[in-house]
Image (cartoon, rainbow, N blue to C red; front, side):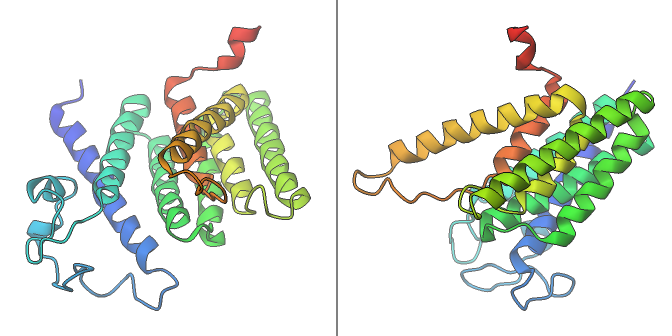
Length: 253
């Protein structure tokens, strides 16, 4: 029987990993080292102490502001930490302590980095998408219910990746970025089979809702030319399909 301490441990592990991924996403390809150097306030440049770096709780305790200059700290940091922490707990509940758990936690960590980097730079680093595919494939190999199930998972994932590539190719990059293709392939490996299609549906539904919300919130005359990265929606849709195991396609059968 899992104890509350185990849940808290997995939550903080995920939140700490998310915090580290945020640092890498912020510093990568900017000339800054993500290995060396203490984190600092972006407004007053004060180096952050351990008290400032407790995932989620530091942001809540200081009301989302720097303790020195009172500059606002984006809520996205705390949301990212809380989200990945929650996903780590849910993954543990689903898989228990196992090698498959390690693989999916690694996949979630890389996915968190990709989402953060894509939101910041609207591009998916090739190295990150490769790591996501490797960890997702490892998870698929460990959890496949036999050769037939594994073959179905690989086929669906390949089709998903190819479809996204063709959308990018045929639209010359206007409809979708090239980096979305490997991410869709990797996430399809995680969900497998028909749930990969469900994840795609959820992604478009979530993207549509967010897109409409953005359009409605913008002033009249400024509602054209909206460019929103699709990878965050892919991540949300596929994660939702993975944990709920709900396939809306079954409602039409």
